[in-house]
Image 1 (cartoon, rainbow, N blue to C red):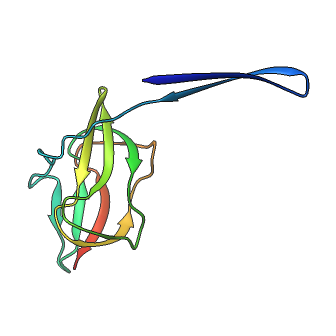
Image 2 (spheres, rainbow, N blue to C red; image 1 turned 45 degrees about the vertical axis):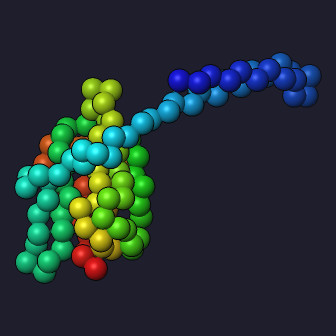
Length: 116
């Protein structure tokens, strides 16, 4: 983690600003997908489920976004491990069922997408 400390005066008051930047490295060679994390509905939409219990650290998409196979959709943090959720298909994001900072259980729906 990189830390930067800035000290200054504002209106004759001493102010200290601490900025911490965390670098996260993803391993895209091992995307997390299995039959348990993907569902295809009767209208051919694809439901992406959480492969593990953890916290939604970040969402890299919005509803109505067009995504390509291999794009990182979200990152889940579990026991200080960062797990990227990668798009298994080209498609459009229909519904995001969670928010950043929320905890999800293994198998819980994260989002629904439609193949293009």
